[in-house]
Length: 169
Image (cartoon, rainbow, N blue to C red):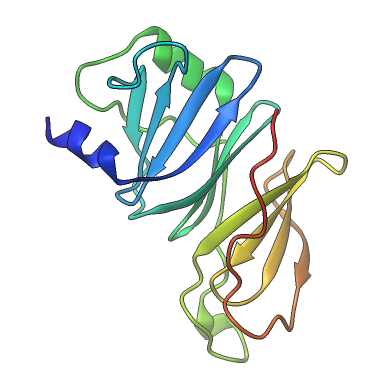
């Protein structure tokens, strides 16, 4: 009951269009997967990501990408679908991430800035990359095939908010 109450704190949604799933992210770090054509009262799967909050979600190709208070975490859809096929009553253990990206902490940068959370995502389907709006005021571009940083946008000055809606996939 408590876990279902945590779903009421949903702040972001995205669609996995090929599988017709609706994915919700919460301020408590929970991800829930629903079938949008059935009851939205009970998710097919829910798992705790281990972060405190999810600020944005995107589905692209075989990845579900989450912008969180501790960076970016991506999960492989095939792994999520395996868990959906064997649902449990309690929240499932989080699938093993395909990759994680942490924004460098302020101590490693020359200028101290706000907390380095990932506030938003914008998928570049052509380049197979995702742009991440960082709470440190910078933007980061990640290669989705490796999870490694490709580019960094500097000098944005203040905290960057949501950069765009997560792309389909």
